[in-house]
Image (cartoon, chains in turn red, yellow):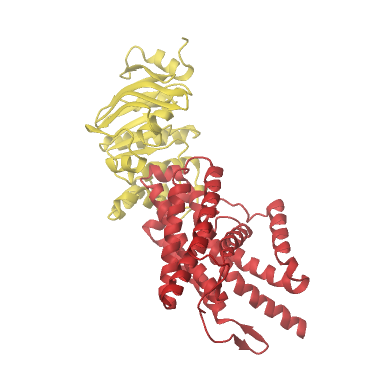
Length: 292
Length: 234
């Protein structure tokens, strides 16, 4: 009986971690779908948002709702800055130029965060003070449920916007064929900027949920978010919102099981190995041209 | 209605348009003929704002529109049906039409109905993804999508490209019909015989320059058709 309980508990843990990955992947996917460019600075912008909230908390002891708003706002500002600097000028140029520029901004954002708060580790107020919920032999953290709920909410809202609004039509038109979108009178630059802002807001909210459930902030959050988000996006097949959610949850499950059965040192190894195999084998759902 | 003067558009150092001047009169079908590589598509892309001209001027209803971005050109009332149609493949036929009306925000449902009346085949395929339509249906959709912005001037780049002869006939009868309803159309076409049947005025473009202009039926028609297909022997 014990192995089955372990396996199921791993699944719960995996889905809990995967919910955060799924949210990160949704942000990456929105940006990648509209711009067809990888934004390496996505994670660092999220980190900067979390740092702004932490700074405010240390200065004023503000409550969670205020910290949430500050994290979202600061991430949107940082994300917009990245878009104007790295992506708007290279919208029609080389994708590599935009990606390298976003890497440079990554460094800049990390420096900014460490100037703001120089220590390596800061405490962040807890999202939920109580202990985990228990169901018989299983337990789940309330924080994880909240993140899972947020992932579902973002997906449903995203779906509604993309399929039932004028803005959604414009976004999908840009994803389908940017040239044809321009010729239909859609301001592609404005749509890109707005999608960047939306993706950054989702990122800021995700970053807040992550640091508030870990109850700590480190500068590693930037790199961590970029790696996990991109990995989940690629596992999900690049450029599809449901794929991003599936990829995030899959990544969480893979990590949880590998850690349990092979040890923590194999956790990332197995995730990357799987990505390598997927990229080499290219199953049909990979690399489809982004039909949301 | 449209007046182009000394327009120069270049890709890097290579000038694809070397000083093009022409006019499109209101209510007319004007046709641009010429062999491959003459710069016809470059001219269309420049008029639509996708390419920025190096010099020269484009005036539309007396307003200078040179160098405006594509969405601003659409707002002025010029819509391009691009070469190879470029419908939105993973959107439905209906959503393609809605995208075409993007700048109008609201009140275009009647126009969608009108498009479906004009193109009954699109009505049948209303909820189908545009990528699954046949070439001719995609061309009709591209025309309908452009019309959704209620353009004063419709630019069409090679609407017959890659279509079966019967479908080409159908497309040209649609063009003639639009013209009867008062549309102004500026048409690029390789199929000179078809184009000269509907046009009131034509220009011949060769190697980035307008080398001839006239009315169909004039004495020079045979020579123009030969050059449109083969290029001049110069």
